[in-house]
Image (tube, rainbow, N blue to C red):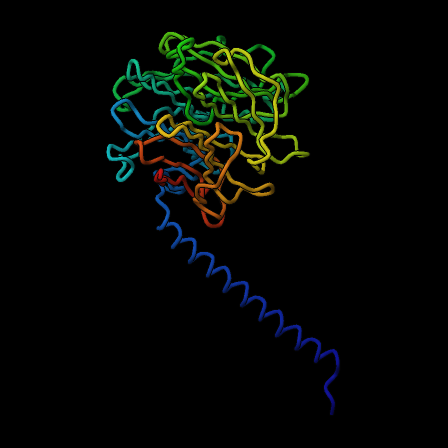
Length: 382
């Protein structure tokens, strides 16, 4: 008797289905194994799922006057969401990043959001000023932008007089650095700078961004202090919108370069703007087509020793992958790839000069997603 066609079809389907399930399971096991192996290979300074935090995000790094490294992040208690119970945390290293201190909580305001770290070192006084933002943990970004939130986005500063061991009570400076028609607001997230040019010597500058109420347009701007961090005020805003998270560098001619996250998808690259008056006014925005991005934060750093501008971001037009360090020896006119730090999932970052031979690179990265932890590595300048 010949078997029915329906039975043959069922048998073939059963075999194929189970074969595919075995393949999928094998791939999952392989991915999980790779992830564990990759995790140990990464030098995680903040590893998601440790120290009581579900996720660590939003890295920032500075080096103090004595050479101590301070790294900052958001410790997100319940998940990876940008809202909810989020603390501002840090760790430090006295040996150039070889070993690190235990995690230190700088600000835990219950179930509210304490984040967007933007530290800046005052090399005249030795103090470290940490600019940050706060909002209710129950207020979502979209509600703040729409004006439907219970509270708003507020700006604070805390200061350390002893290279990160202790921090002052966070002081609110919202009224000095935020206009009434601004809704969403972010400091950094990345390091700020202290200007060296004669006209604005020792000015502290923090890159920021905001959204206007009504128009809901995104802009980048800076805030600054001319009295060693005692008071802060608004600097200039970009003349065009569709930009937000940004980083700032001072070039040898005294110009400031603002490098910005770009929301205009007709050009999938970073936006830049220049200031010739210490950040009070900014030139028309232009594209830097050599610096592609998938819509993500990035970091820049100028090193005087070799007159080089450095840039770090996920170098892709479509996804947060391929964390790449680039170098420019002509102040941003042209760029070359210095090193791909991680080809896989990666997102936010920051940079600092450790010594004349090494750059410290801090970035979000993982094997399966970018938010498995915050990684520290160094790049040797040759």
